[in-house]
Image 1 (cartoon, rainbow, N blue to C red):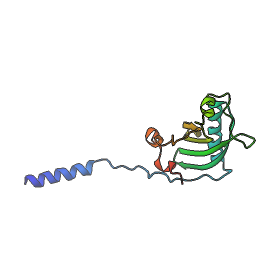
Image 2 (image 1 turned 180 degrees about the horizontal axis):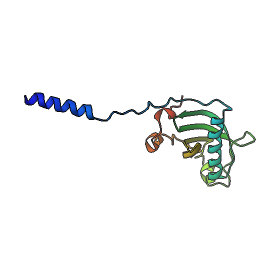
Image 3 (image 1 turned 90 degrees about the vertical axis):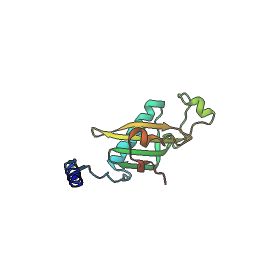
Image 4 (image 1 turned 135 degrees about the vertical axis):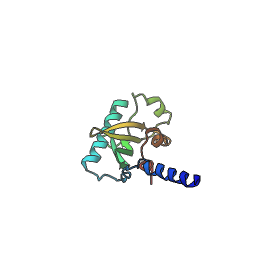
Length: 147
């Protein structure tokens, strides 16, 4: 009888547990060139670079992926004339002169109140600086899969 009572109590406990009706994670998508969504992400990243090093850049996008309210941008930067970004007279000048700065940009952005906000960025990294971002910021891992 005790076993039956225990099983009944256990079943009642499971029946009373709250169910999780969380939505399935949104699917990853790549915004089309020229789309307003893509332009907003690139503009936010460009603005952040300009603020950080005082240079306006253009992007040659290698990967721009969005999942939910998160976006990951991996691109090569270039000056407005199509040449390499000049790091002279920036906070990165000395490192660039020594060869420790690339023309790569990686940025993690989050949509907040309808605007894309840069949460983390690597300007001129020579390694995979974005590797811990999924864990550090709670962003989806799938964003960072470079093909």
